[in-house]
Length: 197
Image (tube, rainbow, N blue to C red; front, side, top):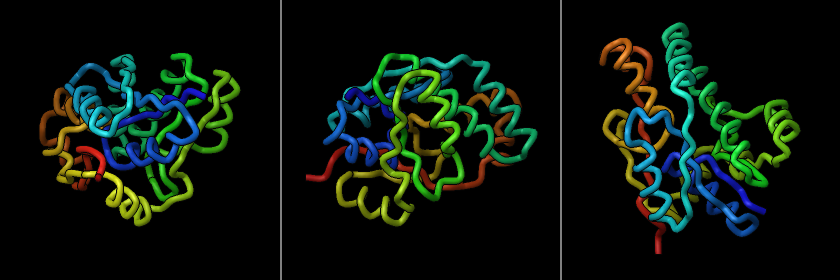
């Protein structure tokens, strides 16, 4: 069965790919608005762990709506959720048997509810797969640390292929650089640099 796994280049989606690999023919897929070179970073990470990679172009209106939502809310969670759901929709239309992601049990955003997963499956004739949904952050950090070479750093410094990278750029373009610090809390991101031998 062919699985298109939403991929940011970070440890969660990379670990999800490794866990799914024995059961699926995994292709890592990065959604982009074409605003930054985020897809390039994700492609490099996918190659470093030995997976095929594809890019799906999302309409810029998705990013604009997400940014507006984040500005209205004053935080990024709901905007990121909108982009994640749009990504799963776009990937489901590509023609894979299954679509999935690296969401984990204790994620705040993005998450995929049972109703969203069921709707995606019913409307697109695909299966939704979430290899990490039963794992918490501490377990994922331990497993990823054992299996992957990972670089970590502040979100604003560490370029990767996640939604945040491009949403930050759109937010800065529309509202100025200061808006990034007002909307996005400081946090550490990860980028996969390869598998551990």
